[in-house]
Image 1 (tube, rainbow, N blue to C red):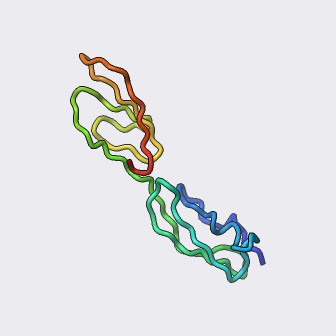
Image 2 (cartoon, rainbow, N blue to C red):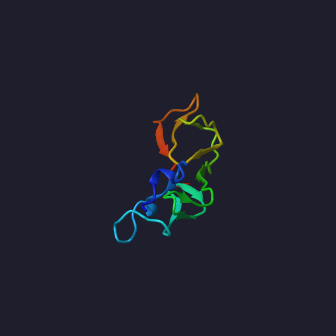
Image 3 (cartoon, rainbow, N blue to C red):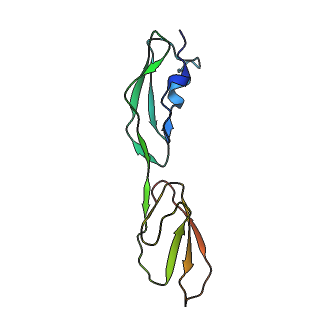
Length: 119
């Protein structure tokens, strides 16, 4: 019995690639297991999913959280505007794009910064 991939967890940041095909390139079947991990830029544990005789995957709940990029500088001459709604001197999450621009009374070009894998 081939395991139904639609029964795999649907969680932001979860990587179910290992469960799509076995080492032989064939879909996983009853009695086989696979690993669900977190994608690049996400934190969480790797969990084992087992293919049951019913053709469904079963295993512990998978949780993946986007990594946080902290703003590590302090400078009163500029502000940071992150498109996800974060404000000055807070943090952005993996994938967020922020724009650093000069405060009123200062001049210079704005710079776009992207939070990538927690840095």
